[in-house]
Every structure is written in C-alpha cells, then in structure tokens.
Image (cartoon, rainbow, N blue to C red; front, side, top):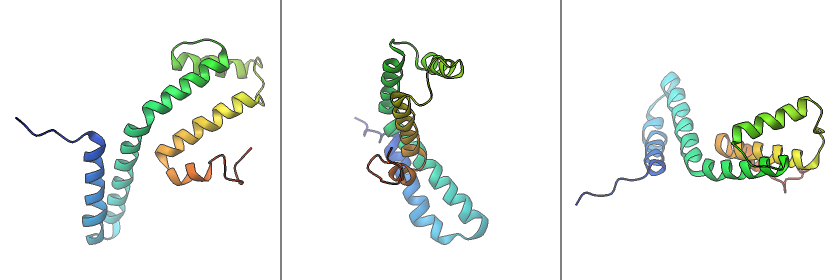
Length: 128
C-alpha cells in the first residue's frame, strides 16, 4: 500500500519553509529578493486553498441576501454593480457597506494577513 500524499497546503508550506529558512539566508541581492517574492507567492496560494472556499460561500450568501434572490455569484455581483451604477441601490446602504468590508477583509486575509488584522472590526482605526 502506498503512503498518503500530503495535501497541497502542506506541500506549499514545506516549500515556503525550506526557501525561507534554509535557502534565503544563503542568498543576497537579486536572488534573495526573488526568493522572498516566491515565498510570499507560495504562502498566498496556501492561504487561498485554505480560506477561499468558505469566503466564497459567505460572499455568495451576502450577495443573495442583499439582492433578495439566489443565483450565480458572478451574476449577483454584476447585478449589484448595475444597481449601484443605476442608482437603484444607495452606496451608503449599511448592508452594502458591511458586505464590501467583509469581502475586502476576506481578500486581505489571503493576500496580506497583516492588513486584514489592521482591518478587523475591533480595530478602532478601521471600525465603522
């Protein structure tokens, strides 16, 4: 029987840890910079694999609640954008603002978790 293969997030974590912990200290200049960029890219992909499915489901539920019906997420996004452009939905609607903040926080949690922490609702600098 073959050994189980680690999942994608575990493999990405191992690659990022090796590059950052073992290889990066031996490099300088251009290759050090490029290795740091690669580590960041691997960690972004890892967080996306871990966080994005639940984030997409939450975003879909918020869009459906905002618009009062279900549908494809891309179609709901387009409908909401059109309603904003046409003036059918006011841009200062509290439920819209909440949706946009949550969507941005989710994106930041993947792309730059430090910024996501700075954008947390309990942070007095960013709380509504």
